[in-house]
Length: 366
Ligand SMILES: C[S@@+](CC[C@H](N)C(=O)[O-])C[C@H]1O[C@@H](n2cnc3c(N)ncnc32)[C@H](O)[C@@H]1O
Image 1: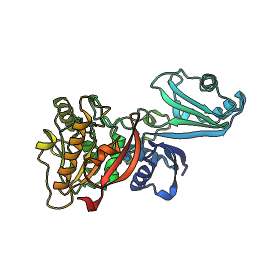
Image 2: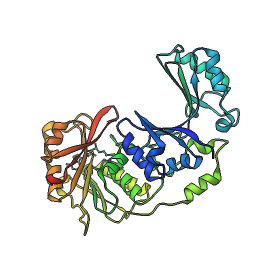
Image 3: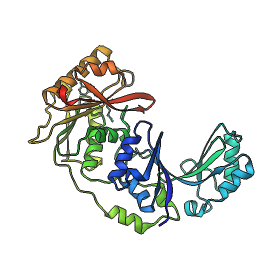
Image 4: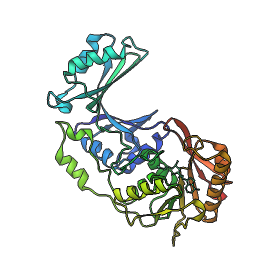
């Protein structure tokens, strides 16, 4: 069976969790190479499709269609010509969105590189067209085709942009890192537009990512293979309540709409209430996990640092009173300390230009 060389792009900091996730969908760790910012693997077509259907942490998937050394225009164009473009581009009018990057290379002018590549492809350049990436580093040149299309954090359920939504990919990483598996209550008490609770519930309920992907437009697309991937379900392991709340009316309206849009009415319970007045679910078994993305202090305006310290302190107290494990994303470690809990770091990542840490209360502290 032929294999496709893939680079699964992952936000730096989430690579290990993404590799674990790939293992959970049948691509063992022994078959992948974890790099900074992504994962290299040789995948079957079925695996390429399955990653898009089931993996919630990656940002995009690139197929590395050619690689070699290019120190002049002839070498660059010869390399680009080795690719069977008919497999990816089809009709002559198919637009292409070119992404060129060059570092420490003889060919350094990105515009000129793009022109030479474009001349070989012979396709119109179009924003939103089939993504083609050309990357030169010390003359080593990799040509890749984007299998995903829109970035993978776009799941299809978000109908509106709340003022500071968390990327679904980061929410998915928090859920995985938290150790929650769907059989204990999950609470997001500062839910905003609902990203964490929705990601958690969709994953635990075995729901696939259901949106269009670029590879479905390729002439080499295999409908039968795709049908076998979409036809193979995952077990519904969501047996405990998922609860999401926010005190802000606009955020709550977005939360309600998104829970409905994601098909999770009855699976995610929502409340329009401040943290101090929320009734969290309890469960006959399993330890509640509270996963939160509190205001950082310099992104969602209107809340002073003193107020924020109170908010973090209340969060710590409520989690502690509920006997829950608290997992939170913070930009400022000192604010996190206001929870009064002993916290361990699960990962670091960049969220919309802000370096953040995902911290979790350690078992002895609650
Ligand atoms: C950074 S945003 C969360 C964004 C969310 N993760 C998303 O993806 O949309 C923080 C949220 O905390 C809410 N919030 C702040 N203080 C609160 C409180 N005391 N009680 C409940 N919600 C609060 C804000 O209204 C805001 O929606």
